[in-house]
Image: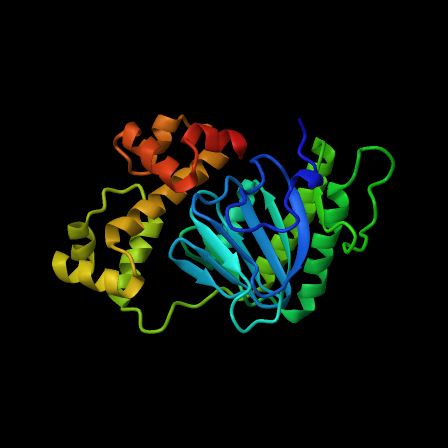
Length: 302
């Protein structure tokens, strides 16, 4: 039975589930202090937010963002997230979309990753903001298309601020509008610079992991590549990045595996091996913990 806007909460509150996977749902909220959402199990779909006024607070895992006007913040599925109007802010006005991201978008978002499946594009030029906002408004209109006649023009959202796209044409049109918004925001923004004070040896180790996540990296091999003892390297890496080298490696391998599932026809077993997981059973377990679904189901829904 199709999900309609009447079956969705007017605004999510703690404990409300995210929309079911496979749907394209778009809306615009203007929330007052006290608004808060906490999803301990994360979402089964991606969440895209574009702030147009006020300020928000978003947390996913250990990552945190404070979106203001002109900021695009994206949350990947499967990791606990919370978002709210933070103390001191009078309101938070934002567009939001729950959907399955197209595979090409991950490459655009990757430079803005802030950890644990959160991407924060916070430097989009002011000249592009109107067009990004217009793309979200058009997405709301496209999601309402019934498939007959011409798609509706972008319309005010005050009376009906949420739409669920029904039918493949409406979904694809809505995703095309979202694709424009994501492309404009990421292509027009400056890529974030490395945080000041990061030791170049830690940065080098991160580069080695990112370049080949499936390689047989260990704390000892990474430490040797930057001329540190394993104990000193592990302490320095954890101190400066907030996670251990092996946790960073596992995250990189899981992201690599997700990209292979999205963009190739490799079997799940070959994806596991290519991503550095010698045991398919272990790969299934940790992938499900990270993304909320087994690898095969992740490929199907993407």
